[in-house]
Amino acid sequence: EPKQRGFRFRYECEGPSHGGLPGASSEKNRRTYPTVKISNYVGHARVEVQLVTHTDPLASTRTAWWAVHCTENGTCMVDVGPNDLTASFSNLGILHVTKKSASHDRRQPINTQHLRSTESSILKEAKELGKVMDLNIVRLKFTAYLQDSNGGFTRALKPVVSNAIYDSKSPNASNLKISRMDKTCGTVLGGDEIFLLCDKVQKDDIEIRFYEEDEGGWEAFGDFSPTDVHKQYAIVFKTPPYHSAEIERPVTVFLQLKRKKAGDSSDPKQFTLHPSVQGKPRPF
Amino acid sequence: EPKQRGFRFRYECEGPSHGGLPGASSEKNRRTYPTVKISNYVGHARVEVQLVTHTDPLASTRTAWWAVHCTENGTCMVDVGPNDLTASFSNLGILHVTKKSASHDRRQPINTQHLRSTESSILKEAKELGKVMDLNIVRLKFTAYLQDSNGGFTRALKPVVSNAIYDSKSPNASNLKISRMDKTCGTVLGGDEIFLLCDKVQKDDIEIRFYEEDEGGWEAFGDFSPTDVHKQYAIVFKTPPYHSAEIERPVTVFLQLKRKKAGDSSDPKQFTLHPSVQGKPRPF
DNA sequence: TGGGAATTCCC
DNA sequence: TGGGAATTCCC
Image (cartoon, rainbow over all chains, first blue to last red; front, side, top):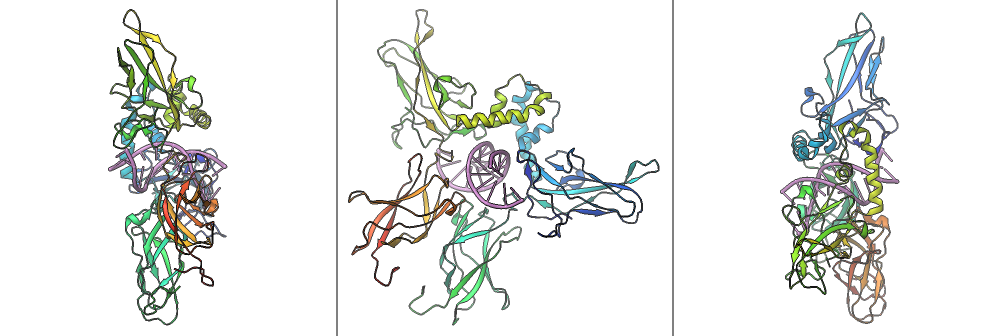
């Protein structure tokens, strides 16, 4: 299986060689790659990989929004066998075809006279397709061909489809990250205003989660509205109150950015809560 | 003359009717428009307007990066006279042609077979042209034609070229704006760290200017490096010291964003400097 | 109109 | 590779 998040689709203009799609269990020091194995068979076989849409895996890549870049000449297959029937794809890239050229691809025999007149309708069509399809999610489709008696790889097995792969550059699947905060402490009562700088977020699909790992898993959320999200890159919010106002010593908790829909989150930052002293509620 | 800044070029996909290019002296309540007057002549005349490049005004719009949108049918001329020879253009729009279609335009008789093979070279060419030309600055070129004895407007006068017009959506000409700061006061000694949220800036061409309008024009600049500019939309900086550390009462000064190159600046925000109390340097 | 964000590109 | 920003589009 391929890793679902953290891999970035590329545009043609960005050139090749940005590293291959890692496997689901890939680590920094020990990389793995998407792999399939043919079971219950001994002999030579050929495994081919194609990109398919997220929602309609069986429909194959009718519209070629993306292109898999395996080898120099574009062939995306691996021969395996006769004993080890495991095919590992170590150099899979996913190419982002721009919306404009994508619509061109779909109508090969188009002549220049018509280019201008049909341009707007083509673009419209591309837009609608884009809405339905979500260009930022794909799956891999592996098809294995067994060797026939003539030595040709003609006996196709039933294809298998991978889990979904999200473009890490897509606004709803990019890595969440807190870069900087103007304060890293506040009072146990909450209500402290914090300026937080972060990587790109979507103002309607983001929350700031405060939590404690031990003690039964307290969590609470920073208080802000979508208008407090500044240009996708900063959030001004108020801290939530801690579960108990009666603490004697400062308590350290964590906060992280979290997507409401996908549920993924950023690395946490520490935040220190100070006891509230009567009559002197902000004692830094 | 047209207004140099604050007008936004439009893409075709954005549709027409986004308001006409204002004149240099245009105000909110009393709009003016680019206007030319033919001197020392009485009679009918026709004035035509064209877009030309910033750097090479005489070369006309060879490459049609922009298109002036005057009337429904695209004609950009006004007839004047016989007494008032002032031509005012109240509905001039500037259309941003995308780089891709711009390069297509330049080679009308291209056939589809060649599309793919020439695509990359065309794009490369467009890129180079873009670098040289700066697509975000244009001028207007007015040409007046006097009526000849047959009633035709054939007698062209020497064209006049307007001052440069900057696309307000271009990163180096957009409106500067301070949205929010986490503090609006600090000490007279400076060194207070401020988080400032702003509209898009370029990290190498921005400074934060503190100033006082009276008292001989004190000014000083916020202390930060390009890496303190977060994703073009936030700046973390330290306040500069005031010209005098000996103040008895709080002093209110102003700060504004300012482009180093173009020199334009944002609306100012107030900032209050508090006296420094010995042994207690941050007395809020 | 301008605010806002997605898409695409550059190094 | 990912960081960063320009360009383009949407409402």
